[in-house]
Image 1 (spheres, rainbow, N blue to C red):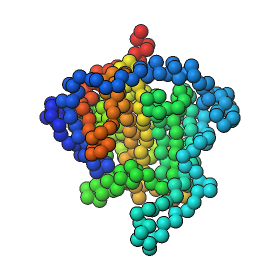
Image 2 (cartoon, one colour):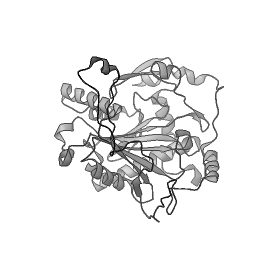
Image 3 (cartoon, helix red, strand yellow):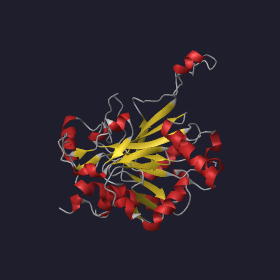
Image 4 (cartoon, rainbow, N blue to C red):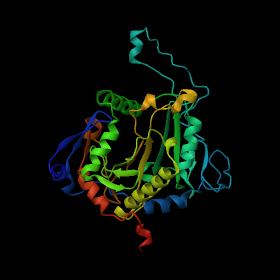
Length: 349
């Protein structure tokens, strides 16, 4: 598909997962930059560290007065200031028979929010443990990480969050519907077909090992957006991974993050998250038949565009009309593949 990599004019790309179009404008990357220049992420972190005590470290005291244990592995606790709560949450009260109220519908948003502090020990195992605890109760378990102050991360200690909800969030709903519709039409999982087609010429594949691949999606919105997906078998949720798959997942995640950091020689900021088949339904949540249209995948959304200090702004046309990107996904993949995935830039100096 060289014709896509060489395109130097605006074009739309369809995202079948979300049923939306992405506008790609590669020629815009040639314009001179007169916008805001961010501080280097490393400089921001140094300043951040000097202003606050690490409340998420072993033995740290959090803002509500609770003290962390001297943990020596991953440490997970309920968020002190959760966005979702299960107790004292009002029930839905829209009158379905009242036409006037259809314009002012309210539904309860019940759930549980957890914080997971990272440790050199396997965080994948802890993700799976948390999923198993929450999945029988909650419809959706969203594991996500915001890395870097530029992404709104409020604490420098490496950590992620796990929000479990009794409802299916908007993006999860759309992905579920699009994948389900594709499966009904072709009797195959959409992302399985997508991965097999990407493997043909590999022009958007950044990294690959025996079980996983990291690629820049054909429909990517953010400059260096990537996905991690399995390519050897259909996997619907994290809890299905065997030990070899967990090990190779850790390897490809580390390789991708090393590439990110090496790209602009900075601690590369991003938001990432895992999307797998919906859960809930008590002990039957692990049923594969109901969600055979799903393929587990991780998404990475980094904001940096040209350097450690220039980021992509999703404003104006993107907010009012539709998503737009500057460089093509193929060019972004080419740039990422030029980076070393095995040796971090800080270890080369």
